[in-house]
Length: 488
Figure (cartoon, rainbow, N blue to C red):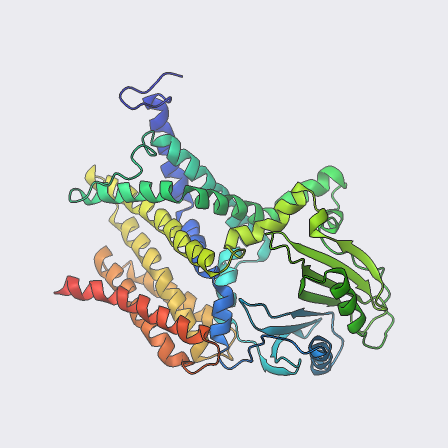
C-alpha cells in the first residue's frame, strides 16, 4: 500500500478518507446509545457508594458475629411467610459495609433487607437510584436479552470507532499533545476529541472490549450451545455455574448453614465469603453455593463451593486452578467497572468514563459543525442532540431526587427519569440549541444542589453519605457558575 503524501502514513489518502467516513457513520449510528451507556457506566462504577448513600440510617457492619449469617437467613425465611425459591446473602466488605439479605419467591417477587452485625434484619434496602443506574447501563431498562444485546452491539461499535479513528488520523499519536487553541471552535473541539481518544486509549479498549463481551454473552452462549451441545445452552451455563442438585420437591425443614460456613473457612483460611445463594431452602433438593474470595487479591480470585442440605460438598471450583479462559471470564466484570484495586482506580474509571461520554457527544457536535461550515446546517438534529446530551444528566439528577424524596416508591426514579427526558425532547421542538443547553446545564446544577438538602444524612454514621452529598453539591455549583458568567 502506498504512503500518503505529506502524512507519514502507510495508508493512501483515499483509504484514509473512506475510513474517516466510516468512523463518522458508525459513531452517528450508535451515538445516543453510546452516550447513555458511557454516562451511566461512569456513574455505575460507584454503585456501592450510591447504595450506602441511599441508606443513610442502615447499620454499617465492620465485623460479623459468629451467628450473624445463620440468624439473618432464618429471619428472612420467617418474614417471607411462605415458600421461598431462593435466598441470597451478600456479606459486608470494606468498600461496602452492608449485610444484604434477599428472598425470591414465585408469585411474591423479591424482598431485600439490610441486617446488623448480629444478623437481625434492620430495614428494607433502598436502591431506587442505584438500580435505575445499573439497569440503564446494562440493558437500557429494556428486557434483559434485547437490551443487553443492544448494549453489546454498542460496545462493538465503540471498539470499531476507536480503531477506525486511529486509522483515519495518521498523525494522531505524533500530535498527541498538540492543541489548536484560540482559533476555530470546531478545530479546538476536534483536537480535544482526538486527544482524549489517544490519552485514554488503553482504558477505552478495555472497557469497549469487556462491554461487548458482557453485553453479547447471551449470543455467544447460544452459538456455543449450537456448536457443542446441539443447541442446549443449559449445558454451556453449567460450565461456569455451580450445578444444581437433582429435583426433589418434597418438603423439608430449614437447613443449618453453620457446617457449610465452617467448611468453607477451613478450605480457604485466608479468604472471605462474598455471598451465599440458597436454592429451595424448604425442599429436599436444597443446595447452597458459597462464593469465597481466596485472599490472593487477583482480579479473578473467587472460589465457588456447592453443598447439599446435609452439608456435603458436591462441587468445588477454585480460582487458582482456572485455565486462562476461566481467568479472563472471571476478570471481565471487575475490569469493565474498575472494581479491582480500590477507590483511586474507581475515581480514574469514573473520570475516564465521562471522557468516553464526551467523545460520543463531541463526535456528533463535530459532525453538526462540519455540516454548518459547508452550508448544509441541520438545526433540527442539533436541537435534538443538545436536548438528549444535556437531558440525560438532568433526567438522572431528577431520578436521584425522586429516589431520596420518595424512598418507598420503587417506580419514582424511573418515572422522574422518563419525564425529564421527554420534557427535554419536547423542548427541542420549541427552543434553539443554546437555550436548551442552558436549561439542561442549569437544571442539572440546581437538582444536584437540591438533592443533598432533601436527602439529609449529614450526621450519618457512614462517612460516605456526607461525602457523596458534598460531591453532588460541588458538581452542581460548578455547572451553575459558568451560566452566571455567560449571563454577565
